[in-house]
Length: 132
Image (tube, rainbow, N blue to C red):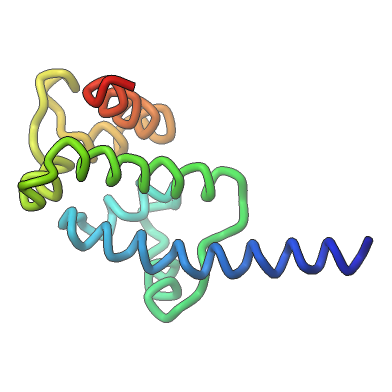
């Protein structure tokens, strides 16, 4: 039993180690500020050290909140790539573009302002836009 738990823990570490650079690349493509990156990850906007650690190769936290946020951020990216398959520039700019459906706010602004519920709102908006 202990061997199986160790194997599961090791696979989670590997997955988090793969997810972290994907998120950092995504944040760069979306042109997010440091504060926006931290807010999207559910971290204090004063915690710039976390971004530095992630850039140096540290995996994101294994907390349920962090993993849920990572999954939703990657799902937003997937939705945008599917909605704008021939225009990646538009897909990447979308997060910082004002949107009437978000009461004139930007998607990342909605996430910063509302936290996790804002992240879920942006994702569900894109899911509906795709017909899911």
